[in-house]
Amino acid sequence: MLGVGLAACDRGGPKFHNTDVTGSGIAKDGFTLTDHTGATRTLADYRGKVVVVFFGFTHCPDVCPTTMVETAEAMKLLGARADKVQVLFVTVDPERDTPELLAKYVPAFDSRFVGLWGDPERIARVAKDFKVFYQKGQQSSTGSYSIDHTAGSYIFDEEGRLRLFTRYGVGAQALADDIGQLLAD
Image: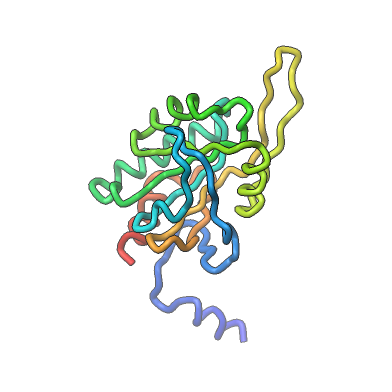
């Protein structure tokens, strides 16, 4: 029986580097958040593009800037096809990550990238729908803190369907390959 199941998995469909989560029910409600220019945005605003969604925060010392650099490198690898891709950075630290700060931070990686913000309750709802974990760490005597959070990204196809979950550190080439396959579908 196992052999039949394995044979059924190899039907010539896309061979992704990342985890195929098509039909998982994750992010079924999408989002309504404010972008770094002050405009209200939903996932439907980006229909017709492959959308990469990453949850992070601007004060992140490692995972967030590394992911953003890797994603920007993937966009370069895609060449002209990158114009059919939208990268969204959703803050999990709305207390510090104001739209003004997001407007400086997010496009610094690629001018096409968009930062998304919401009040703490809205961010909590969106993160829950995406099954994203985040938790504010203990505040230091200077008032600084870090946030533990899910380190992967979600990729939606041009029809707005969630297709992939990318793990942290997968590499720009693997990310570009997977996005390229979604653009070709």
